[in-house]
Length: 383
Figure (cartoon, rainbow, N blue to C red):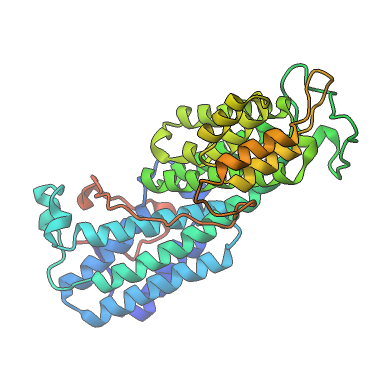
């Protein structure tokens, strides 16, 4: 473990200044075990436990949590820093569980890890404080990612026409929407995929737990689906068969991205189901009673209000298509009257799924932890 000089106030404060304020993710993650700063913090906790010094422990945990809060406040819009400290706060929380001495957290430990459990203190109160802090960091982390990707969603998912034969075709009576972005700089589906890949690679480099990463990706996919669908409801020029084809094609790109990153179990795909059904609704035939029945049976993730809105907004882009007749809309509406869903048109793009922090014991033995010289923590001594 690591030993700190007895005078905690004089020594731990600069130590944490280095661990939090001065550490830059890009400078420390290369060849570093995931969560190394968290392990260093925990080994300091072990020293206070070794001395059975409650005052030292209390002071150290207070300085630790306040230090993390401060660095998050100073870097509130820095995705890489938020990712780095979300990961380390999570790993620190797991260490407090893994070495707590509580039976439920010891089951997957090695005998040596169980020998290293805390002897004197119950840190369940501090675990709750760290858990609350991790949730706070996670929400800010999601907020920054959403702010980065949101401007790309409508241009990339709806407006950019990548399918062959679509480019240049505009619905009759509609003019091209003006944009402050030059055509050469317009966001595309590739822009969205590249941004997602940047988020993913950064989270992986910072050692973010896989289950936590999956929750973040699910939240991003929900935003992509909700923003795209809301825009569709507001724009008749986007409600056409060909645009439905484009939407479903773009969804397939997102699903392929999930597959490439081995994130199929994240439930991210399911958050796109309302948008997928809207794309299908734009493509399907809308004439006969059987068509109406199929729409009723297939569009289970869309509310009645949303289905009717899309049908009424449907705009043919060539002479081979026809508008949806009012009588057909009434048929579908009559079937949908049996549903007990919320009469909601727009989706809440600010909705956040509840985050959970799964317990994942570390396979790394404390004995093998090495502190890089770049950390400049020479005043820590292994005992």
